[in-house]
Length: 255
Image (cartoon, rainbow, N blue to C red):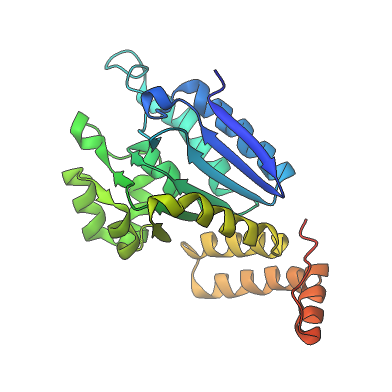
């Protein structure tokens, strides 16, 4: 069975985690397939949408593959999770997680590694690691405090209690929570909006925001100037200004 389904339409690459019988738990094959799918999307699409098949987004690490004593967890993180999360966060096109159900453990942090997260109101995010005697990984200890603050991140991780999608949106963990029946249409509309947008500017925007998490102000201002210079010389900038002056919608070339 293909562990990650790939669909490309109108500039949007939809990657669907496809192990619904185990709530899309991440195993070694899925991590490898997902890296290949991300690379393909970066090469062929203008937007990447990541979602899950069935009733869950992703339940995290497949524990059948990581039984105590059966695997070196440090090696798996260094050799499989780290490259996967690096590929996802460095993806040059906008990435959108459509969280259709439970996102637990590494599955929650996989979703949070995307640029934008839209979740069904029935979805929940669970930092479940301490339930089995582990610490949060897959980038969770880096991402979550920056999104919701140390106090909330600490509580979510220590207690390992589900955070409902609406609460996650209120906290700033995700962009939006929508009624379950509206998730597909909302994600499709947002993905189409991004696919029609200035892809090169999105790429520069992502670079600037992520660098800004560690840069000092002077370094960040210099980076903004360099990136903006590139955007200012692009066809998309010329088209955007022309469309504004003509009072029409822009037609961005993108790539």
